[in-house]
Image (cartoon, one colour):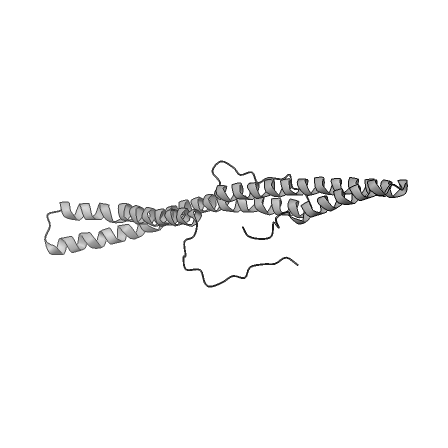
Length: 199
């Protein structure tokens, strides 16, 4: 059974990665775009017309009412245009996250099937690049460790075969030497660091 370390305490930081900061900036950018577009399209032209008109109060009220009716006619088109652009941009941004997550899942499936040669490859503008690099480093270290264990297992098999030959040959000195060799190989395997333990 693999030993796991229990989660202790609650997370005190809400923003824990650069990805979250990037997404926060994107959302703030959305908000600024909405405010600027709505202010520019809806409020600036009527304000400029009202300021330039030298009319009495009742004429200004009539002009303001006409401007509000005019705004009502333009408001929905501008709002739909902004929301459409924001939806398109949101899909693009989420794709830069969902694409790498899909690739990570495929890598996990391949590793589960025993293929340690797979690597996570991302597109140029995808997010999660640092995570992909860390995953690839882990896979390289794991592949190197497995290759080392396979080499040690091959050496143990050879030592066991030599021991078997020495036993069948009847030489006690040869048998003792082979047992010592096998003992050294087993000790090397036992003193390897456990990859499940945290450094």
